[in-house]
Image (cartoon, rainbow, N blue to C red; front, side, top):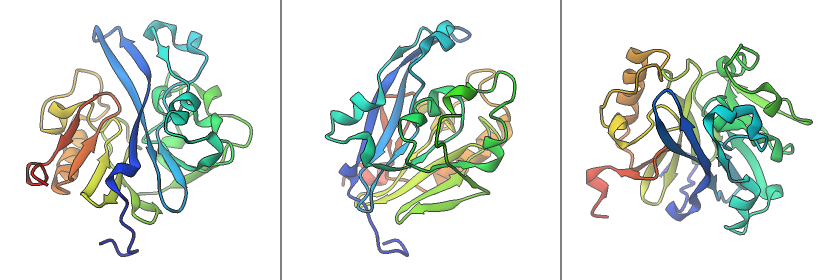
Length: 231
């Protein structure tokens, strides 16, 4: 039980398929996922995929799924979303934030400071009317039973989301690890982490949580901790 007494049903975490990208430097196609959290105090999102104007990212051969369509498949309307967490502000994690101008966006201050850095992200997808960023300086509770922890490495301001559920803690890892193998200790593809030693330290911290499950933005699989697999 969490200090707030709130434990979320594990079925309240819903993966949203938001498209796919071709990474030319890795010769690899990856899925793009966000996550719907059906929280009892109001639904929220962890990451929102990339924006609708895929001409801005044409080198990635983006096949895009509007987040509105993805939500409606689960009987959720954009107006139902009360909060958004961005793991970081690379374009494929925050590009549809503007669909939710009424919802605060929780991001690390260090990450937000990089919006206008050359080639860091697509600023026009973040500068929408009504944008309201709640800037964090470290770990924070976003809603009862939902918290973020800093997991730098991919970027200095990267954060992951931890949710207390009926099945144990669940982690939305963002790009702290791209897939199951990396989470379990594999090396990341060259050039994908800004700070490799810090990346490994962040993953050790996440593994020490012994989460019941780990969800990825770029891997369709869910990684479960052995001690939870029989439950």
